[in-house]
Image 1 (spheres, rainbow, N blue to C red):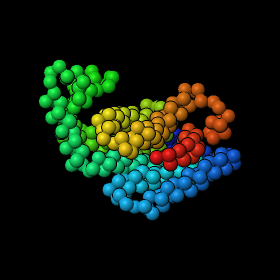
Image 2: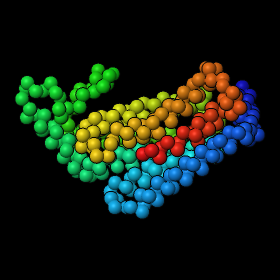
Image 3: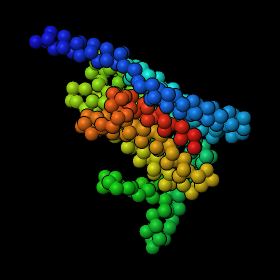
Image 4: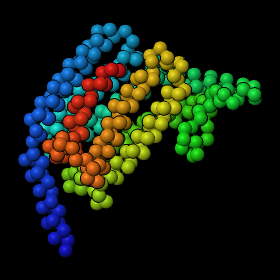
Length: 300
């Protein structure tokens, strides 16, 4: 019985490999994606050289450059994955690892704009002490206290600003970097054994379990970023933080959730557009969309 199952598994893996190997995207998809990739690379290199030519604030600019480099990384990886879907999981590890690094760079960029880590902690401690000294009748303003959003307010008590809050937010971002890199490596290992099944929500596949873990990790990291913005928005008013914050969130988090939504709709049979039919694979649809939309990161 085990031999039959082993043979069936090997046969299925061989069929899937042959299907990926024989597949080539439509010419129109390759041309459209290629045009947008050239635009993304050109504008990102221009923006990169602009920063390097006026490198007057290295504490801030070196982290901002790290975020900008995510554009060519995503663009090239998505285009290669679109043209050669058989290696999409393997080269996806590069994108995922750099994505986690880019999140670290974005967080460090905001901290650098506050004057560094020590000044950011001092700012939070100062706000926390100011709240403690406020008259009782003015405590309704909740200055110096982090009030949680729904539904987190049912699970977490309000945070009084200070070093502890800073460390919680920092860890919330760092844990996503670690888990993202780990799950990317795990996906490659599972794919090598033919049990990852990217885009398939089946209990005997690794993809749905990885998706659940990443969704929890991303949600917490996103929540920490939201709280960090709420705490520092006045101090960072000179860099227009809301615009940068929303743009970066759409880059990192919406890209992932977009891929999960495509996979889920395809599994339920609700994604039946002519474009989806021509591209055949969920990963190819996601790669094609990323090739088109990723140039907007340059608005940072």
